[in-house]
Image (cartoon, rainbow, N blue to C red):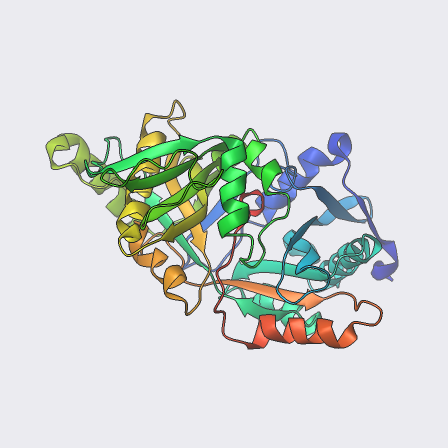
Length: 400
């Protein structure tokens, strides 16, 4: 009979904001031996989707108590062999939460069903979601019950921000490019990447985007507008953009073992006593902290790996000099695959293995078949989920 009392509706800011945040706190439960990072939305539960072209949050009520939430967003991206013009409308699912006292009652499933209905009402072609590869509960509901299929395992690379600048090679030049120029470069060199957002211009113009930067060796001839207006690019070059995720939400440690706590405090103490050693800083995870997200990482040429590393060092120095003292880490996510250009990024981007995740799990599902193109859609889905992930993946900073 309790199932009849379940009500799912759209999130309402004034009446639901505090309730959703309380639900998030109640869901901060994990295995006792694990360490968990949680999101502090700073009073804005929809902050992670607010910058998407279309978005929604649904809440579940039972006996007037808010017992579950889910979020979704919609955009147009590149998916190879999808009609027309390799572009598809995709829906992203995130933030599924059910109160610990109300689990195993079908609430999570009901929220997924309603969100997929919203996707369908907006002509979404594919729905996808991301989760930790060890998240059994999430895999069970999406992969087993709703037939989502694994299709990518990108790497999340995390590097701490130190309180001193990193030295960048003197023979490397780093420049910031204008937004129009950055859009041109991305559309020219990355528009064929899977999940490249068709509205890249909106991302680059967003107030959270701190700029696009390119690197080349100083001995190369200055190339003016960086490949646009007929200019050639050098034999080796690299670019990336920076997104200030810490401006909209913070991260914090939910729990930690005593050994982790002792190690963190001891490391910080040694760094304070012997600053001349310039030890890499272990972030203070025990207070809310922000981070920069590097997106659109691209490189070409036999020595471009050094340029990628230099750009990462440049971003580190940006974060180190930032007025926001709570920016503790720099994060990027690169798609897995067999192509050298993509695999090598893991080696060129500085990161701590202790903080990074070598395999994030992305799952996808077909929501509709286009009239007269059923075979094509099926083949496209098969290529996404069964073929080796040989193409690079563009990770949208709005979905971090």
